[in-house]
Image (cartoon, rainbow, N blue to C red; front, top):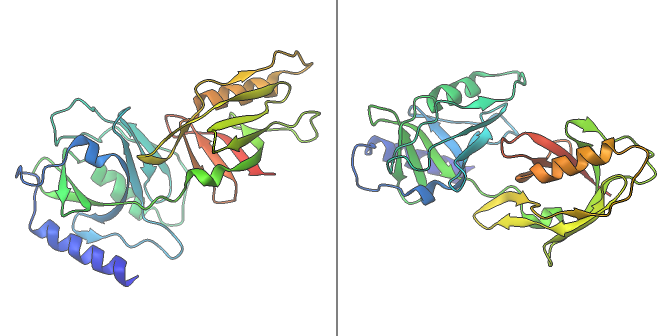
Length: 263
């Protein structure tokens, strides 16, 4: 906790001495790639509630996707990777619609993000997001990875696909198993066997996709579950741990498309 408080104080001191007007400490687009904790808004330190994490924002500079959590809800959006260096517009963010006991932090986060027009380095580890007046509105600090590829190791039952629960008691219960050393998966989609590789990203610990899955070609009386499973797997772009346990697989818009439960 002391380390966090010291970091916040240092960030505050840096903000007082910095703005986005100067070209000094300009950040390249690649520098902002990855996930960042939101540690300060309009000069006030963000203090998460007990047992809660900082709100965060993630930038995928390859696709121009933005994702994160604003304090209660997941948020998602996009930005122009071809914009003038040091400029960014986050005014078109969308979010899920859960209600939490205290929405004030989330409201502050979303309001501040809507004003962002520029970014720059703030010291060695932080980023300042500034408004049109060049004043830092938000301070970001690199987020320590909360998930790692090794979390996926082994066999997982597919409990949900495409927003619907997988029925229990199926003759062939859908599952996938990860072979991390070979970067391959195999499993069953509900009728047919599935096999293929997966692609991870060293710069983004939560990124994963399954670009070349193949399956056997059996016909079963009910192919609806298999259709949902295959569609969801083809849409996957990232993964994360779920609060209730298990792993969530998300599409490019950060929508949950599949839930995995350890067998």
